[in-house]
Amino acid sequence: MEHTESHPFDGKAFVRHLTTSPGVYRYFDAEDELLYVGKAANLKKRVGNYFLKPPMDPRIASMVSQIARAEVTLTRTAGEALLLESQLIKSLKPRYNIVLRDDKSYPYIYLSGGEDYPRLAFHRGAKTGPGRYFGPYPSTFAVRESLGLMQKLFKVRQCEDSYFRNRSRPCLQHQIGRCSAPCVRLIEVEDYKSDVRHAEMFLEGRSSAVIDELASSMEQASRDLNFERAANLRDQVAALRKLQAQHFVQGASADMDVIACCMEGGMACVSVLFFRNGVSLGSRDFFPRLPTDASVSDVLSQFIAQYYLERQVPRELVLSDPVEDMDVLASVLSDHAGYVVSLKPSVRGERARFLEMAQRNASAALTSRLASRHTLLARFDDLQKVLELETTPRRIECFDISHTRGELTVASCVVFGPEGPEKSHYRRFNITGITPGDDYAAMHQALTRRFKKVVEGGVRPDILLIDGGMGQVAQAVDVLRELGVEEGIRVVGVAKGPGRRAGEETLVLADSGKTLHPGTSSPALHLVAAVRDEAHRFAISGHRRRREAARERSTLEDVPGVGARRRAALLKAFGGLTGVEAAGVEELMSVKGIDRGLAERIYAMLHP
Image (cartoon, rainbow, N blue to C red; front, side, top):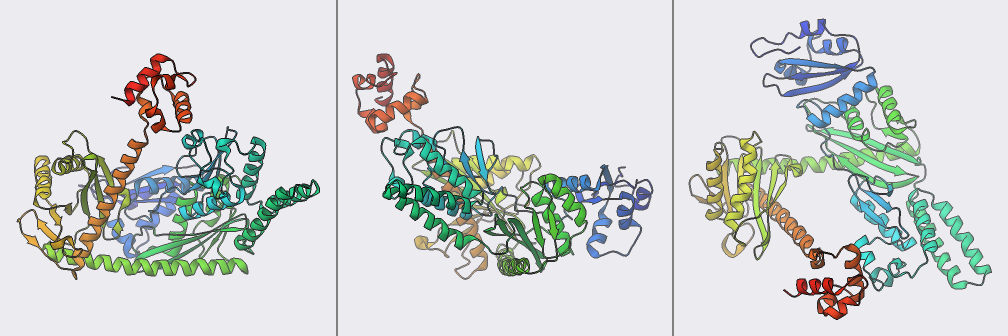
């Protein structure tokens, strides 16, 4: 069912041949770009609404006027159609669909498994390791706060395994009472496992059961005249009761999310309050990409489908507004979760109070977002005037270089648009094969690697900012000319001003060689400085990460015959790499598993 540009799309003819089955439909424009993805319980009826029942709202009319061809995919049920629609929207991001842009995986608390002394840790990403994952939590702060509580209440270790295995004495966490020092066996395995079990119960929301167990153990310790242990257990119970009183939310379901949507000025904010096991885990705000004239019901429906069909779903979703096909959506979520999920757009009592709180959050977040957006748009408009561009720029890219005396050079590329930083488009480039400290060569390499993507059909910026003066700008001009992609890209250098004071930067225009001094009150310079500073931050953080990774690598790893076990034995025997470096061949041979030949190789590697 494809149509070429020379034959206008006949929507009525297309509808005549459609089936009444459920499915997903897709509209494409003359350049074969996807315009819209929709679902339908009855394809013939739903698609017919676009072509057989004018007039329609401006958004739909604009989209229909661009349709050059359409495709359909049949499904067995309306629920399958909803799933397929959600997957296609998330992966293809059609122009006229509501798209949830914040797709970062949420953080978890990870309890490792398969070892005598498990660790609790922050985790984000694929859940492939042995052990248990608790969450998801709405923010990194919520995870860090919970991990801090675990240290105070149960003293379960949180250090990396490599650090844990190589300790010869307790660390600072033990000294301040936040770890029981399993690394040096100051706690028996069974006692440690008991602490781990209590931590698990607490994270599952069974804090009352933990308190009962600890209280029982406290009484037993008192009967056994073990008053020191009884006092420690008493303090632990008191701390748990205090924490329980602070965090338990009266009226909250065991597992419930409260979702409110607010719309204004062509933007929407969806605010979610998270409750698990009767405990509030905080809130998070989302700003989905909207087509024109989307409704609150549309936003909530698309948000729920795109967000929860890839995550753990609570048993209850409280909504600020009813959504389309609510029964189908609830059925699909229930099948996904393995238990009944309820969608409740009308609530009373405590749930109404939580919903009002979520609505206030959404309204406040949207007001703040609109204010910052208007400021940012004004800065983009001013930059157009300063650079004398024909239109307001839509995409700005900025490059910066970071290294320490030429070591492990990293180049950064950050991207800004009228909505602010587009962090999913940020890139770092590890620079190799150049003379250390040659910033020009580093810039040339990074720009070449970035703009080869433009040659292959990638997106190009309207403005290319280079942190530096005419020398760095010349590198950018050379690269763009070599690759033949200079058309439509304005190259601008951002050079330090007199005294290197903020607000006095000089803009170097590559096309004319002129320099501009917008001044401290210029909105355009505020924008340029913000983009430049973000590129600087992103480059420095990448360089530091690369440098730390290089320095964490032990020289012993390069010695043939020294594996993880022998390396740990050496470090433990001599108290670290400095001690190993100070040891002679005979001393190295005193370590189990190190013969003379291996000791000599180790000594030679450490004393080149």
